[in-house]
Length: 116
Length: 111
Image (cartoon, rainbow over all chains, first blue to last red):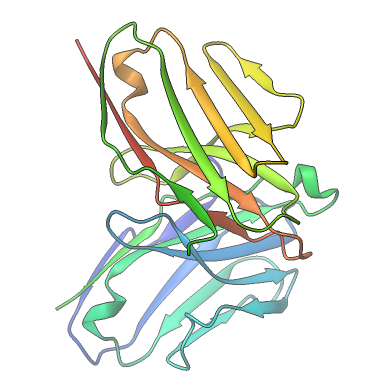
């Protein structure tokens, strides 16, 4: 257990529904990252926060996706009007940003989304 | 062309074998390099960081060749428990710290 927790672990939804995932990072970590992983591929970066500020969003993050980290602690990732192509594992990672070489990211167990 | 490229395998080896994985990256300004291990349907876990001077952790040795933009992982005396997917990971030159993953190389160690 890395100390990063994600909820729920699994989510099955119907196309067109909205879903929200939560990530609780390691408490002293100032950076939080969201990645998406599809079968047979490595994780792909979606977005990241430093404290409460969202500093970068990937072009993979369409306008149906929104992420927040309101108090610089936990984060939520919402997908509106889900599509079958959104089916994937959504991974959250946190790190203590300082010297680049020490930006070790610790991953949560992920939320597996299946859109029917 | 993908930013980080790996041979997906699978590599099927007997227990006790030595196996090597390679990875290439396209951004010459990349600053940090890692190998992560991922078990089936689990999250990635850091295996080791990779330095130009090379580093060793028990049966695992990682090497970085900046001139060739090439990273390697050597596993000696393979164990059944080494069966997993090994992800080559790079941090680019920006301050984001975002990880850029290769596709992963699958290792199956057989008795």
